[in-house]
Image (cartoon, rainbow, N blue to C red; front, side, top):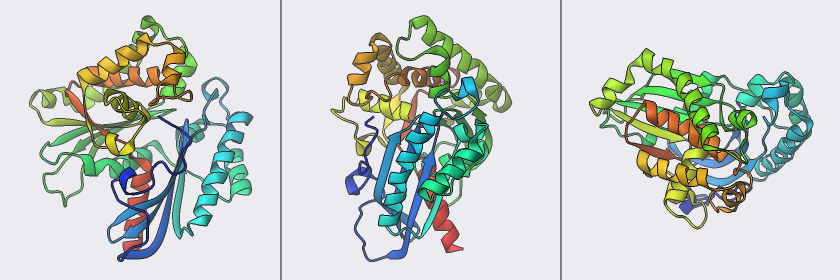
Length: 347
């Protein structure tokens, strides 16, 4: 997916909540939500309209904040410099859009790094942004809140996952048929393995079949206790489970499957991707070299060494829970933050 696209998510065609211009019904508030992950720095700016919002600006850049973290236990100077430069762009957008309410969160890389406090202080001094380090449970809650509109209320349970750079979040949900009732989080799991951490250990430029299979096996072993706790498989056999994926991995695979000439959020968000279709794309990518992956318009050079680790994590999830298809969400933490800011204003 193209990575440094300040306006890629702006406007009616690019976001399901609609356009950018002030309209009747605007509640007078402008909100900002920032998600600083192990791999990406992402910002959404939106205006509140009633109980919803309309995105007016966006920014996304791969910063690889967690690069080398697994080996050293600290955020490196180059990674922090890249991230602060991206956060300066975000701060400029926040100021330009006259944001009135905001929440800026960081996830696994900052949770793990021994020098996280130093980094957060440096960010505050150089950008004015106050970063909040959230727990894995809060991260999962925000993902679910952001993705809930895509759930099928006719199916009683859902496996929701988010394959991140430094961790993989998994949530087991009860889904009430009445859309006015909130979904129920019945269990959640945060695995300290994501596309960056697996790539750091297994490599990403040249990935053999044996290496790919080893990643799938490792992730399957890590996920199996969650299945034993919740006994999801018997409900899948009864047709009572749906699956929803929120991550760069599933959106990239969906874009490739749809043969998009370049990544298009409006085409990808909410689409259904069959397990066989996802595996077919993964098989194609395993057969490609690094340069060919980098040249693909839905991958790009910044993701070319990470995408196969993501495919391996997805394959482990699909093998353990053979639902047959998943709903693809190009939304998650930031949308969950925006909805939370709206709800806080209404109280």
